[in-house]
Structures are given as C-alpha cells and as structure tokens.
Image 1 (cartoon, rainbow, N blue to C red):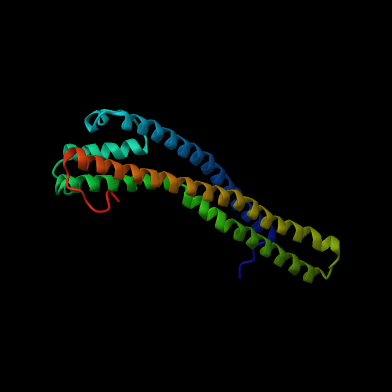
Image 2 (cartoon, rainbow, N blue to C red):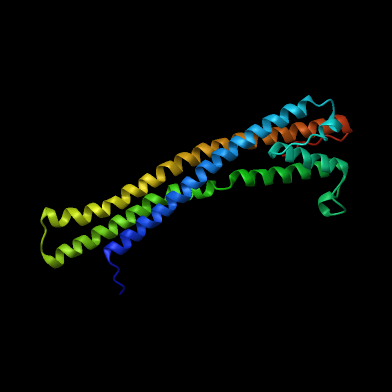
Length: 219
C-alpha cells in the first residue's frame, strides 16, 4: 500500500488551490473587460442602426461587437450570399431566421467562455481544501499513536497546518462563486438584449422586404 507523507499531500493540495486561484483571477478581469466592451459596442451599434433611414443604409454600417455580427449575419442572409449550401437553402425568410439563430448561438458561446471554469473552481475548491485537511489530520493522529505523545504542542502544529488547506479552499471558492453569479447575470442580460435585437431585425425585414412573418421570430 502506498504511503504518502502528510506534508506531500497537503502541499500538493495547496499548490492545486493556488493554481485554481490563479486561473480564477485571470478569468475575472478578462470577463469584466469583455462584458464591458460588449456592452459599449452594442450600445454604439444600436444607436447607429436605429438612426439609419432604412435597412440598406444600416447594412453599410461598419461596427464590431455581438449585435453588429448578428446584424451582419442577417444582412448576409437577405443578400443571398454564402453559396449554394444547405445553410442557404429555403426561402428568404428561412435563411434569415437560420442565420440569426446560428449567430445568436455563436455569440452566447463567446459570452459563456470561462464561466464554467469559475463555476467548477467555486464548487470544488472547498472540497479540495477539505481533502488536504482530512489527510493532514489523519497522519497527525497516526503520528500521535506511534509516538504516544498527545500534548498540545504535538497536536496543535500538524492539525493547524492541515486546517489551513480548508481555509485556503474557502478563500479560493468565494471570489469564484461571486464572480460566476455576477457574470452569469451579465450574460443573461446581454443574451436577452441580443435576442431582442434579432427579433426586431426580423420584424424590420418582414416589413421592409415583404417577407412572410413567422411565429416565434428569430428564436
């Protein structure tokens, strides 16, 4: 039976928790900047889009960002570009709905990037720390049994070191969970805004291009 020392296991646990913390604090500012940039780009594009006199003028706008990419996918479907692939099959309304739906999914995937890491770190870090604590206490008790010394000086040191792992695990998990919940809310708001824009785009196409309206819009 393998016999790993308490120090090796506890130190390995602490190293893993530090790695989790590094990943978490790398993702958090990146997602904060990403959502702020998305929101700013979407506001700028929406202002220009709704100020355009018609869809033809709106199609000439040169913007970047999620909403702009959704609009570009819609304009591409309306213009019939993309070749003779199955994605371009069907009538004009079908192509538009399909293009908007596909682009919305792509934008959601981009916005969701990194959230699963925060969720995983937030949910597993306390248990990783607890594992290190339990392992450390187990070996501390075994050492006490072998030596027969159970004084406070002998017990406090090893057990105190083992408990540090649980504390660090909780410290790593808290910011990850808070960030995940915050960014999840931002994601839901941004996704709802994009879906609303796609629906508005579809309605405009129905009115200005004479497309047959469909139930459910671009969802």
